Image (cartoon, rainbow, N blue to C red; front, top):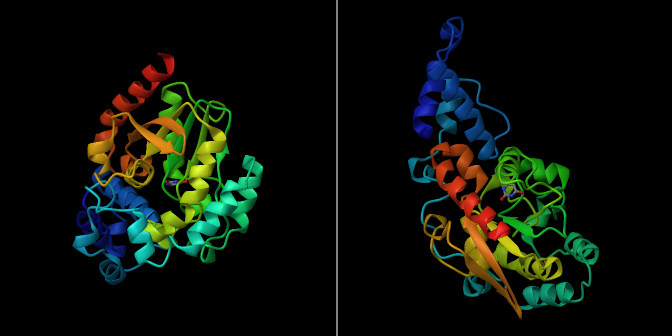
Length: 283
Ligand code: URA
């Protein structure tokens, strides 16, 4: 549902109309509004129609997420933003010295080169089984992940678990992380500079886990690790390769579960991609 329609529905609900039972479509709209606010990082809902109106997003920002993305995560963009020089090299040196996942987790937690660390509660490093055949890599922690210090534990994570469960995978047979370890304020997209500051650790993460297959959840993760500019709509469902030094890992981009929460009509494509993954695992 378009955000403008959701807000219009909310604005219709006043103390006078509250005594009338809400229709199914009003309830659906309200749930959608609450989800939408939560995904935008707004934790307290407006209480009056005037506040609802003020809180309404600019139409330009409405089509979030899976539209064809502008070029992202290039080293040049990161350098232009002040990264990619000494801090990135520093991160690369630190990551290269990590001989185990415990070392890497500790190194990430004490790394100060990602600006997101200043506003996050803690790093969300990983969850699941590092010996699993499948490594799932998403975008960045959200509010729940920031609170718990683990990736994909909020609404999107619950959907991710159900998606993996549908093809027989769980925390014992999948290992889950993100390309960015700290929550961007208000759940905004991470910038190129933020992504690049984490890249040395993400790449070392893959080298240490050495998964048989990688699932790239969402456009940011796919663009970052495949060094592609195309949007996830173009990339999803097609096997590609993540290349790190001498290591080559087959990788399948899929829609991000948070996108599927907002656009359940796209779940059929995600299901096709999951079956593709399942076939590869059993083949
Ligand atoms: N979205 C992500 O990409 N990662 C998380 O950990 C949570 C939401």
